Amino acid sequence: MDYLALASGAVYLIVSLIVSIAALMMTCWVMSNISSKRFHLNNGLKNRSISNAICFVGYILAMTIMMKNSMSSGITYLQAFIHADDPQFADVLISMGLIGLQFLVSFVLSILSLIISLEIYSRITAELDEIAEIENGNIAVALVFTAVIISTATFLAPGIEMVTSTIVPLTIH
Image (cartoon, rainbow, N blue to C red):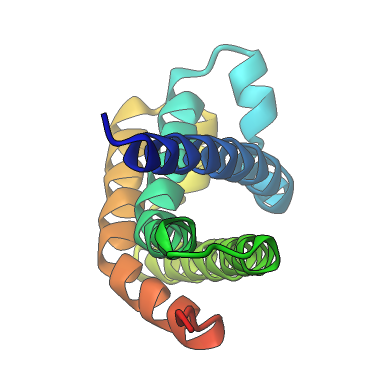
């Protein structure tokens, strides 16, 4: 058995778990607080609003889509240090710090991109107030709005990955 590969896989799993939980918690908090001026996600979820829940799922999936590749490269970078001939603890700590910075940059870019793109979409469809319809329980509008959220995230993901890797370059010495 290759114990180094096993240890590397375990580190990848643990770091991925931490990153995914942090992203989920931050996404829920940000989308509940930032969008609360127009869209009351928490109230809708507490009242068992299916339309609000559909949109909330869309936000979570969108953030996952937009952040996944950026974070995968950071975790791969950490694995490279672990697989090095003589891994230095300081290098591993530095790489973990870079992963954290990369996470924050990726998260902020993802949130801002999503908010801006949804604002543009809402202006394009000015004849329909999606937020009011979703608040009133219109599941059809919630499904279409969620599809827009996820589709937008799919198109934005490569750009977010490129900007994140430019802002926080990960190079192995």
